[in-house]
Every structure is written in C-alpha cells, then in structure tokens.
Image: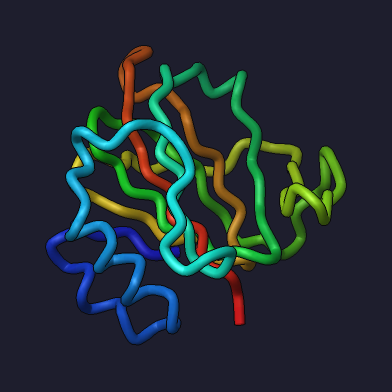
Length: 150
C-alpha cells in the first residue's frame, strides 16, 4: 500500500508499466468536472472509474481485495476513511469472484484518512475498506484507476 499527495505521483511511475499512463491521464483530465463513469486509458489494462457517493458508517462497509488489478484511488473532493491490512491470514466473508475480481473479508482493518489531492495504491497483497465516513457522512468524488497486474 502507498499513500501520498498527487504532486508526488511521478515518483511512482517506475513501479509498474501502467502507472505512468495512469498518472499522465490524471494530469490531462479536469478531475473536478469529469462525469461519473468508466474511462479507458489503455483498454482493459488501465482504465479509470469515476464515482460520486455519500460515505457510510464503518458498520456498512466491507474489506475487499482484488487479484487481477492494482487500485490507485484518488480523492478529488471530500474525504473518507479507508481501512487497510495485509492480505495474509485474512478470513473470507465472501470468497473470491473471478468475474468481478473481488473478495470480501471479515473484520475491520485499521483506517487512514484519504483527503482531496491525495492517492492510495492497493496491490493484490492488500485488503482495503473504502467509503467510510470521516467525521460524519459527506459527499465525495473519487477516481479509481484499475491497472492490470503483469
């Protein structure tokens, strides 16, 4: 897992071939005005999911992981808590669904605050629990760039 400010994104471009086009797309996009939806960057290898939603109490959120894709989660507007823990020794709540590329886990991982202008990277070795309210429910806008694992 990585947590940083967007202005430092160039430091991470060498970690995976998909990171450079992902961060280039972010720089070329007006993230505040882009509409919710799916945006291709490099076909199915790198794409962006833009969403707007209301954060929820922790009790309504579930830890998850992915096997096929790395997530770069970028907060555009608002803030939320995201739980995080290493994947090893986690107990499934819902087993891995290959088609949806997601598994859900029991428990509540420790959280950190993702604020506007920051990003977090979650690898297949991480579980993460997004959408948790930070100091009460609020409307957020977030972009999740999915990068296919090599």
